[in-house]
Each structure stands twice: as structure tokens, then as C-alpha cells.
Image (cartoon, rainbow, N blue to C red; front, side):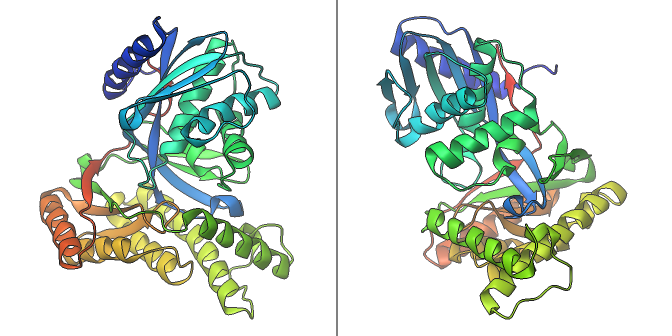
Length: 380
């Protein structure tokens, strides 16, 4: 097993200190799970298509130990604690932890009441999977505490069930799989039908490149309802085409309904772009994927209609300042964009993105450099 990520170890210190302060005892250990950036392949996961995420060097860390009752503590926004004798009806941020325990019990991996103190620096509300990071850190903690050796692919399914059925968010399996399965220095190509995967080298520094992540600080406007609406559109399009999922739609498929046809077109072309990205990374390196990233954004903006003014501003400004490619990433309606840039141009692109937001009276974005980090792991 690789050594714990040094940054995850720093966060584990914070989680363990919070555990001691809140519960007056030492935790049995601490477990970290990262947020993610999806390089390409958006909204394809629940259509059983292809995705290509990589893990961010931002982590949720769960410090945990057995207890008499369920006790969940989070350091987020000053800290809060939820105590309960039952896993029924937990709401808010603690639902992501209670949901994992519930889903593990349902899957035949029984767990008992546990204390968990959570500390995370995955940006909240930025479309970088802060919720999946929480879920996966808790899942690893509970699995280790109660002696369950769970295959990581199955663990992703358990975590997805927690989010779908307990929390009530109709997500696909991308986020949990990325947090649990990504590897350092790799982008993970995954087939969401069978969860087969290929860890593709993605070490931008060696090519003189940088990936900028732009957290637009835009609120997720109607995100849950619109996400569910897009999923319903895909299900209806598949029904009209006589296929189970749009993954199975022919490349030349079309529908009379304009909205459904545009949803179909995005899924078909996005799956194709993922495959082309894998090919380009293996044959020519990351410098050859810029146009694919940009085409993905256009498709999400026009055909899937999940972009917004803040995301479009970030993408357009980055491209105008010389980025090789740029796109929104995540579920949409707010959140983050990514821009692939030459390392020597990173400051110029960052300034252009920030200036463009100011000129349009949009929220000031947070821009940071991303690398492909280590997936979920036990810290200590």
C-alpha cells in the first residue's frame, strides 16, 4: 500500500483533535477520501457510459471509534454534532454518514454505533464531490473498525446507494468510484456499466502543462431538480429508442422531440469524446486533449443545458487567454470549471478568469492548480 498522502495526514491531525475535543477520547484511527475533478465524461455515468475522473489533493478525513450511540461531529462552519440511537431519519450533513452505515447494514456488512469526527478541505458546493468524499471516508472507517474487507467497486455501489436512497440525491456512480478508486498520477477511465477501469498516466508537469480548477463560487441553482430532470430526459429518450440506456444508442440515433434529441446527442458525443481522450493521452499526451475538453463544454452548454453565466465566463476567459482547452466539470448549474494550460501561462489565464468575472459582476472565483492525487486510504 502507498504511504498516506502528506496533506491527508495534516487533515487527519485536525480530525483527531476534533474527535478528542468533542468526545474526550482517542479515535481508533483516521481515514481519508478525496474530492475529484472529472476530466471528461459528464452525466454519462447514469447512462452506463464512460467517465474519466482524477482525484484532487483535497480530502475529507474521518476519525472514528466504536461507541454506545451514533455520534457524528463535523468541524465545518464552526462545528456541529448529531447524536442518535437510531439511523432512521438523520438529515443535513450527518445524513451522508448515517446513510453509509445504513447502506452497509443493508448490503450485509453490519456495523455498530460509532463516533465519527469529520474534517474536510474539499471545497463545498463547488462540484468537486465533497459529499462523496465524506461518504467514502466514513465507509473506509466503518469497514476497518468492524473487520469488513469490501472490494472497492462494491464499496462505490454501497456509497451510491446511501446517496440515492438515504440522502435522496439521484446521482450516478462517478463520484464515489473516483474517490475510492483513483490513483496518484493517473486519470481513471471507467466504464460505468461494469465498472472496469484503466488507470491512464496523467502527469501534466512532465509535459510542461498545468490543470487549473476554477471554483466559480456560483450557487447551485435548482441543481437537484434539474439534475433529476436531465436523468428523466435520458430515461425517456432511451425508452423512445428502445434501448435500456443511452450508452446503447446508435451514433446516428435521433428523436423528433428537440429537447430529448439534444440530451441524446450530448450523451452519444460525450461518450465518444471520453474514448478519444483516452486514446490521445496514451498516444500523444495531454497536449492533445484540449479541443475535446472545449467541445465537451459546448455540448453541455447547448445540448444538455447545464452551464451558467459564471461557468461560461470562466471557460471563455481561459480560452481567450490561451488555454489549450476548458470545460465546466461536475453536475452543472454552478460549481467549477477546468482549464488545461501551458505551465508558463497559468498566471495569465488565472488573471483573465478573475478579471472577466469582475467585469461581469460575477462572484470572485477561486482558482487553484490540480494534480492527480491519491485515492481513499487509511491515514493511521
